Amino acid sequence: MNIILFGAPGSGKGTQAVEMCKKMSLRKISLGDILRDEVKKQSTLGKEVESYMKQGLLVPDEVVGKVIKETITGNDFILDGYPRNDKQAQVLDNILAEKGLKIDYFIYMAVSEDVIVDRLSKRRVCPNCGAGYHLENLKPAKDGICDECATALIQRADDNPETIKQRWKVFSDSSKALLDYYRNNGNFIEVNANGNIDDVYNEVLQRIA
Ligand code: AMP
Figure 1 (cartoon, helix red, strand yellow):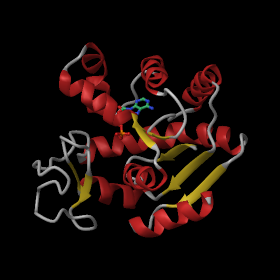
Figure 2 (cartoon, helix red, strand yellow):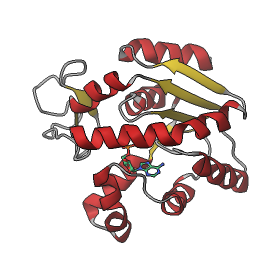
Figure 3 (cartoon, helix red, strand yellow):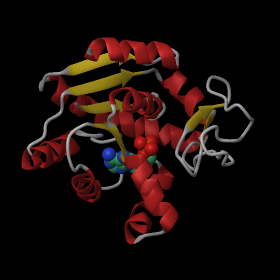
C-alpha cells in the first residue's frame, strides 16, 4: 500500500506516519528528514537547501523532485512532506508512472492554525533517530532524553515563532491547488487532526480499512 500523508507543519503527520509504518510494515519517506540529514552532513545538496529551510520556504520543486525520484524504489511507503503543491503532485505522478507504481490513499490531516502554533513551539525532536516529542502531550520518559536512543532532544531550528508563521503562510498559499488535485483524483481522505494522537490514528485506520 502506498500512502501520501498531507497536512500543515505540526499537523502530526510525522507522528502518525511512524505508527502506521509499524502497524502496516510500510517504509516512511520523510522529505524533511532527508533534507535535514543532508544539511547536517553539509553535502552539496545540504548546502543548496539550507537557507530555504532556515527561512521556512519551500526548496525548489526541481531539487526535491530529484530526491524523491531516487528515494522511491518500490511499493509500500508513506510519503510525509511530499508533494506540497500541485506541481510536485504532477512530478510525483510522472515518477510513479515510470516506476509502475500508484498512490492508494491521499490522507489530508486538517488542523487549525492555533493548534499548529502550540504543537510546533512545544515540539522537541531527537537529532539522532528523528523521534518526535511534545513538552506536554508526548513527553519522553526522562526529561529531554529520547526514549528510543537516549540522545539529548533538541528544538528544530525552524520551530521558532517567526519561522512557524512563515511555514503556515507557505502551507496556506500552496495547499489549495494540491488538495483540489487529489480531491479530483480519487482516494482522498480528510481527517480531523486537531484531536489527540490516538484519536487521529484510530480515525485514519478506520478510513483506510
Ligand atoms: P518538514 O520537516 O516536512 O516540516 O520540512 C522542513 C522543511 O524542508 C520545509 O520547511 C522546506 O524548507 C523543506 N521541505 C520539506 N518538504 C519539502 C517539499 N515537498 N518541497 C519543498 N521543500 C520541502
